[in-house]
Image 1 (cartoon, rainbow, N blue to C red):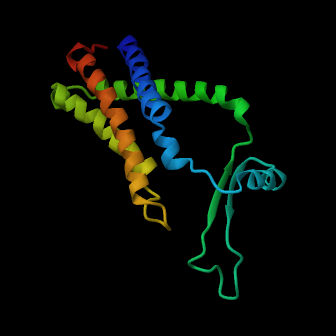
Image 2 (image 1 turned 90 degrees about the vertical axis):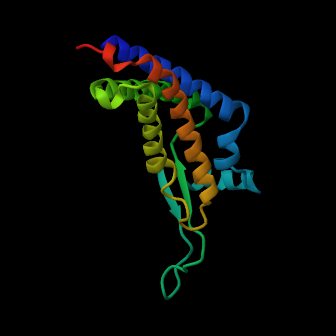
Length: 183
C-alpha cells in the first residue's frame, strides 16, 4: 500500500503541476485576479524597502481620530517574506513537495477509509472533489465580502482549487481502487 500511496502522490503532483501551468502560467488566471499592479509601484516599492525591513505581516490602518478608526477608510495588508525573486527556485521546490504530500495524504485517506462507501469510481471521485471544496472553503473563500474583497474573486479562486482536485480525482479515483489496497 505504501508504494501505491507514493505513486498516487507523484501522479497527483503531476496533475496539480499541469493544472497550475495551464491555468496560471499560460492563461494568467491567478495573476489577473490576485496580483494586480498599482500606480506608482516603483515609488511605493522604494518606500516599503526603506521602512519594512523585517519579514512578517503588516497592517496599514488609517490614522485614528477621536472616536477611533474611521469605519469606511481602507485598511491595507502587507506581507513581507524576507526574500526576493532569487528565492523563487527554492519556493518551487517547496510547492512541489507540498503538492506531492497533499496528493499522497489524500490517497492514503481514501485507501484507509476504503470499503463500501468508496467502492465505486464516482464515490471516489466525489471524495477528491469534496477535499477540493474543503480546501477552497478554508483557504479561498473566508475573506469574501469582508470590506470590499470581491466575492467574485474568492469564488473564481475557489473554483480553480476545486477544478484542480477534480482533475486529480478523475485520475486517482480510477487508479486507487480500494479493493486492491492490502496492508
